[in-house]
Amino acid sequence: MKDKRLTMHDAIAEYVRDGQSVAIEGFTAFICFAAGHEIIRQNKRDLTLIRMTPDLIYDQMIAAGVASRLVFSYLGNPGVGSLHCVRRAIEKEIPAPLAIEEYSHFGMVGRYTAGAMNLPFFPLRSYTGSDLPHYNPLIRTVDNPYGEDAIAVVPPLKPDVAIIHAQRADRSGNTQLWGLLGIQKEAAFAASTVIVVVEELVDEDVIRADPNRTLIPGLIVNAVVHEPYGAHPSYVQGYYDRDNSFYLKWDEISRDQAQTEAWLEEWIYGIEDRARYMEKMGEDVVERIAPGKAPAGAIDYGSYT
Image 1 (spheres, rainbow, N blue to C red):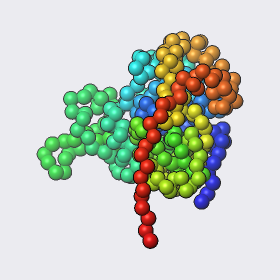
Image 2 (tube, rainbow, N blue to C red):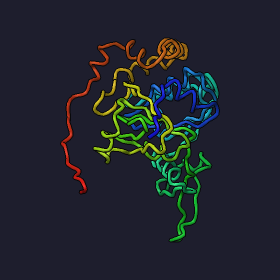
Image 3 (cartoon, rainbow, N blue to C red):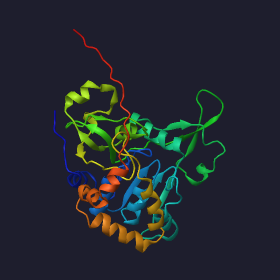
Image 4 (spheres, helix red, strand yellow):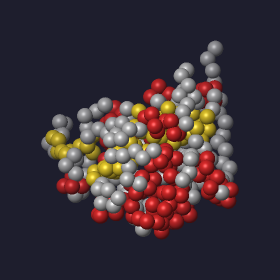
């Protein structure tokens, strides 16, 4: 099997190019901040950022000027409030203009699903009574071929690059996830290029011993990056918890563009890689986000003779 391991620097340098569409997915958990920070560090520009729930990582990336367009559903600092950098970009064009393309959560799920299945569109009824179709001309209606009514449809979503964080993978990119999952699998199958970032690299035998956890097969993966704590301040089930204090702190920092730029300079531009980032965070943060124990029961898959 092909060894697809790359450093984060090399994976972003090789596969993320100016002007592309990039999806960094993960619903509350598995949000690959390390990849977003490396995109900022490499000064990528004119990206279309795609995400069901843009939160702090896209706030930081937009504050750094990497994006010209945002495709999304819910938008906010979860449990805290607004994304101030995104608002500045939309309302005041600081640091640059930002076009937006908004859907419901299910609309984004439908778009990824259609992209993954190579469908021309995805039908859904949840836009009945919504004003989103008025503001987004890509949400359209078609006649129901099995009835007399019309139904809303959304176009397929096929990112140029999907970046997926997970617990573990082997060198070939066979990737296992468990816990609170979002749309990672569909995003990976919809994308032209897939970068998988993992907390742990394991042998193929470990993957084969628990095949039902393998949501992303290596055959669609272009690069595997081993990056412990790569999702901080979000969480990875069984590896570390959510750093809630960071989300509160970011709300204060991001209210001012100068403060935001100072943070970017100190914590992204001024740091070589993720290992240095966590070293700078300190042992107290690592201890605070350490998870409790909740081991899963063992099962015997059996074998054929």
